[in-house]
Amino acid sequence: MKLSSLLALLFAVLSSVAMLAADTNAPVAKNPTMKNTIPEGAEIITLGAGCFWCTEAVFQEIPGVYSVVSGYMGGQTKNPTYRDVCTGTTGHAEVARIAFNPKETSLEKVLAVFWHLHDPTTLNRQGADSGTQYRSAIYYYSDSQKTVAEKSKAEASKEFSDPIVTEITAASTFYEAEDYHQDYYKLNKNKNPYCRMVISPKLKKLGLKE
Image 1: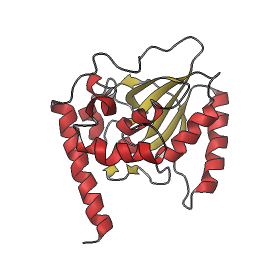
Image 2: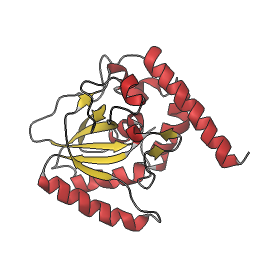
Image 3: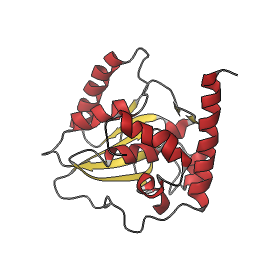
């Protein structure tokens, strides 16, 4: 078996273990580091970049970001659970709703991080995580955000040899994920192998605090 196949198998096993841990033994974020409140004057964008644990962990370290909340968006099922979304039948993507201070950072900078934290050229897949719930997506809240997103995508496409498959869609209802998904990396980085094997290297690659 090729090394790439072995690594894919390993990540698949880790993903399965991580899902099981999340459903059973993961601690609840009773006092989240990033509060779910949205300050007055904050701008919001919702992004799908594969597993929301990774997306949340990255954006929590970005200057100017007020809060990051993991959740679900883009599907037809109302009030979905994590188990529902994992079936791939709800139409929802795992997303992170990001509230940031436009005086400290910009949507352009937020999206620049987005393009580098995942592979936007793989359809419905990030690493070993496969399914429509892991699709790459930008959910905008205004026409101006749509324009910025489309321009950012066009510029980012120059950095990839394969076409970017990221969808750019108007935001719909945001369903907040269960408590145990919030601040997941901060609460589980020394417990869950997925955090050590997948999220930590991603933070290191981006030059962020592990």
